[in-house]
Image 1 (cartoon, one colour):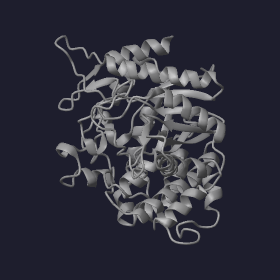
Image 2: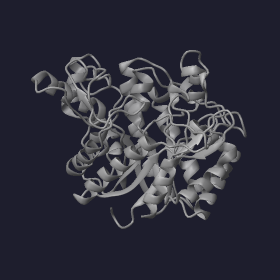
Image 3: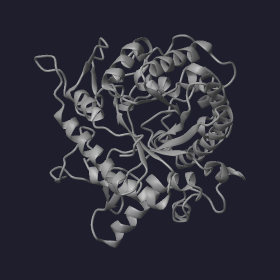
Length: 445
């Protein structure tokens, strides 16, 4: 690992904060989505979530005990600008003021993310990420929050996982706003990336000597068999899932093979897609100071499954390191390989693992402790995979475990637990797990 390596944990606003109707916070697409019957398992919502809005001091104390160097969290856009634009809600800014001051007092560097999927509903009512106006609104939001927090925060992440926001939210319909339309998904993806470029410029203007990056999720993949059909499907899946975002962020534009494939499949029309305006690709591809990579698993891809993560892994198929309770294969070696690939093909100046973790449902035993050895094994293997990449020359500068707390896992409600800290979702009680102790000891070493 590099000398200045950052060990951290990560969360997101809607998944942990609660307090959705307090102190002037506006409605978000996830408030609307979770309150729509049938959208979320067991009808769970983020109305309370982990109650971090009221228990943030307890959570900072847990992080201090854990010994992390950094805390990656997201700012709720609708707390700062309840309508997405317009007057700043000072009470919302004050919450993040207090949180950041407490983190700094604890020796923990804040790594805020501007957008982790919780678009103000007022902007969605005007077209959301399908509308170019939302790009300008995001720049306005970035301007407002960095002017107020930039005196103490120098590292900023613009977006978390724009692939998920665009495709799971606008194509699969499994996330807010719940649409199922290719045109909407590709338009939203483009506007998310353009807004990244717009916001990066605003941050650099408002915060001298700032570091700006974006957190991209990835799905490394491989052909399910040696057949030419599976090899072609794997190549297309990689473009759909990875290159459509990595390429433009690093100044390459959208990959030619994917543009051609999307035309052939009727996803876009002939010529330049109508959502691309002059200068967009330069904005998207402006240099970043670091790349955040969110990694959980890798997948085999077979013909006919090149635009889905339903990979056809059948019950009884052996995966050497098993599966998490999300049903994801545990494949730490693929993380090393993907980091090496990103270093080789895109050459970012710095990389942070901005999310990595596993869902296992272990809860308190008879003595009140949580023995989550499976999570310890997962984290240990993936930390070792990051170390292997670093030793091969990849400029990895930090690792953020997902997540500090058992939180609302989006449309899966409270059925999945990723936290180092177990949370009783009825009372809010926190119980550090065995993985919390393991991570604390690993950081200390």
